[in-house]
Image (cartoon, rainbow, N blue to C red; front, side):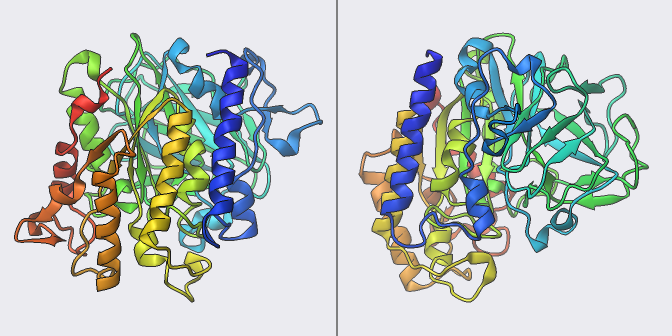
Length: 471
């Protein structure tokens, strides 16, 4: 695809999202706060082809225009991946900092953040994406490193590599923007934990983060500890990811394309074993790795706990409509989307008086379905296939009322029978109790009657027909 055609496609996708957020009911796609909405829709100028390797260290978005600031976005990397061999192997959707983010709500200064991620597919080189999407000031990363993980915050001997941006060891990212690193010559085996270390000298202000990492990460005391092989300097634990929103790998041979798992807390793996990588997208990736070599698709997890299709939230991320292009379409090598979202529109949409939820709304099943149609159109405009997953049962949970169950059943009926998606994955039947399909099977219940446990997430991954991803 020629560069002009790529940018024309971006314009079409932007029009789809704008149309979606303007024609859906009040509150759909609106900001959960003035800053969150603006950051969720910040336009970042695409980098001119071929210029990234010579970019200055000051990376910015629209705010940097006209000041000699080189602006970058993930879009050119994503659409160029077929030629370059780059594919997303891990990702986490960026979110605005909230009080629950603890350290990240006030930011970091003279500290090293050490974050653990799981590579769903391997490669001969890697690059990372750092995000200041929801920041309020420029953030400088003074030194960045990547290595293969050992135990806890320690890294494996002989695997540490410096990460550079445009040939420089440091990078400054303006509010609303992100930066993509230079390629790092690190061998990444599939199914390996990687460690990314970020040293930040000056105060960051509120930190863009991902809330439910389901992974223990680490923050140091004062100083630059990027090169530390051991973990003694890392005195604080956190269950969030900060600033890091994707890791790509360069495959030695052409990969069939990345699968983006897009959804809410069930996709994010809430209820799974901490640091165990037992979310259903991880289990799907392991199924891929066990199959024929030519059918090994990377799988990235773009779930956000509490996220909704139609409405933004100060604590649970911008809506699916608002973030779909950023978190799904723009991922390197993305070819497929599995959409599992809507339970929070059904359950949380009518709730008033809770600051984390933003303005109250009570969308109908038809309005949720209209949101799905816009996401389908956006995926198809990008040349991607999108598969609809049925909403899993929540009988006995705090979400369970006759009204919410009626909406869930109406939405699932449409997913199964409309033919609007490129295929259907029936997660509801995979984890439902045969004796009472309105509830999770007891062996799959994490205990809250809403989120599956490790066995339930494995059952969801097993329910996916891998033939859907064959060329």
